[in-house]
Image 1 (spheres, rainbow, N blue to C red):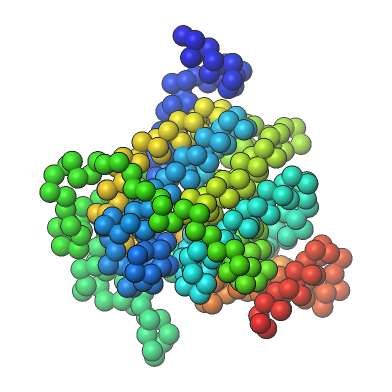
Image 2: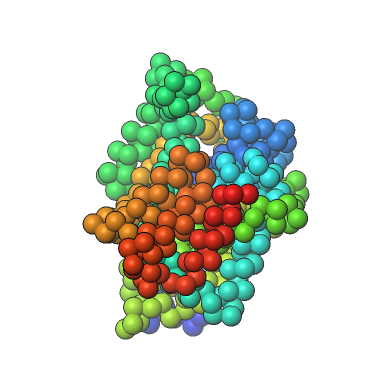
Length: 453
């Protein structure tokens, strides 16, 4: 009874019309819908060289077990980062929001930053961007920067990232391959690996269309089981192999290469910062509205504390050894189940902690099983294009360039830089330069220098 009274006093459950039981169910729901990150994030990062051999892309696909201490450490770091960040959010804000390594930013980490600069430098970049995010929140400039970026470019960035990670998913699944004649082409569906990914994609899409809770996670697990019958992955000899103590994070923890991160250039750091800021703010306001947490002005009262939790979690995650940790839109599923306070986040974080003892399961999940998750998430991110004004060329063209550059140049930062250049340019040429916030002009200059160096 004393525990119940303490929870009521801290989280004000009665005031928010909820209960411990409702918050627990909501926390489990949020966890189920975002637990796919436990499988997807390590799979992506190992392809970017976070494995003992430092193998990139296709060579890294051989690392499908936890025998590799670096891959195993990434699994642990992913879970710890999500659990700690989500609990911190609940305690600091009393909001039902959950966090984990962000989709899109993890792909940027693995396929752009790590191959060129090394994963240690990539972790350094995450640390620097998270620290800048924290400092900007402290001095109150975070909203100024967020408002300076045009709405069209924000939505274009989300859509472009969606295409970027979908392309990675199609490639990992063997459905799209390189072709010397046409640049890219259709993969061979006579290959068992390609068939597995295609079947997993259809299965996950079917589960999503039926609004089944945890569709992406369930799709990954069922596709992995199908992979056993196709001989594409190993099976555990007994159920006990799936339960163990978590792997040590020693191989990757505190492995930041800060000098290497600074050598990346300001646009790379700003890309991590910008995507994290606008993604977090958009998610916080959107999910806050769903939970009825916004005030009369349509603002989230505790948004500054939420930003502290988000930025601090990115810094903490980089120290553990994982990519940028950010707020997840999947939090809305827990809210739909009645979650209204930070107790929902506490339960979500605790469920993440429990999976630390099930990490061997990730060793039996092939890349072909996580590829559909990337495609599905990419498709959902594409929905932001509906908020772009394509009837206005000065809005449509920069958005199109931003979206196009990300998959075609295979880099999120190149897409953002291209958008930062074209937006003030077309506005100025159409004598509408007053519509451009002054911050966009120095960003355009920096973006030009980024392309020239």
